[in-house]
Image (tube, rainbow, N blue to C red; front, side, top):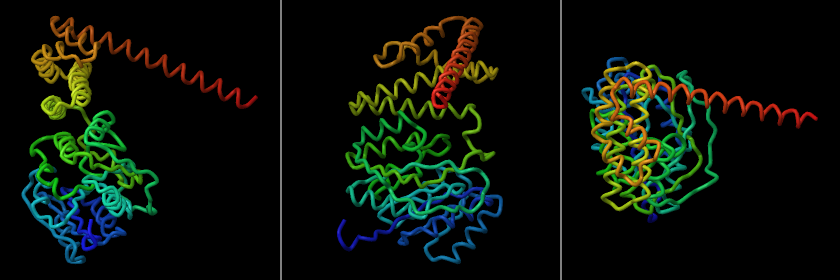
Length: 355
């Protein structure tokens, strides 16, 4: 980065929809960043509470803020709309019910500038759903890792939760990657359709820093993570896309992992719906299993246990269901025995420490 761009403009995109109880905390955390050269784009996605009015109030208080009011298009649509209005060299996403530490943008920007990377990644802490203002101290990264696209894709798939999650947030993107930051509208788990491709396009220029100063709000009553229902089909579609993409790009390590995740999730989610007596969804998932089982059975990557479960789908529905129920009961028994053994070992260790 040359001297003229030492303090590049960072575009912060914040989708907003009916989060009036969280906006003040989120906006305060962005406005109080130690890095000041920001443009903050608030996309009011057709809010029906006071969120849109609060966005306008904040815009009047800080000339770095721009508000875009839109009809409701969902999280993906709001992000895509915000992306059309950026002027920055770098892009950061913050969800409006979350918040960031005061050094968040500085840490990410320093990482990508120092490593000459196109994507910077950090982890997150889970924030209790109380809506209170944050009281966070400055966090400074203690570790940096420069990753290739394949390494980043593998880590994100292998450990889809924190710290190296597939989410749009917790990252900084160079503007050259904007064409690949288009999120599919009308889809849940929209990040899963996008992040792997962004990593791929970033090539060998992805850096991870461990400040982990993004605060992800959990236990919101409207969270899509609350229940497992028909939305899970979108996640399966995303996983299937990754399998095809990895095969086309000759990435066997990614294809193997994505294959195992896709077919394993397909079987696991089918079993969940059966065991929870969600008959309509269970039958819908079973039909998908039947459609996919041939590919799963001939794939060199599919796990043996998954192949066995695929073979069981040839059985009549009632028998298939009975086997899954028995398997679930046995699984719970094995888990209980494992926990009992773990507790026993912990008790022995405590006795040894005391003696």
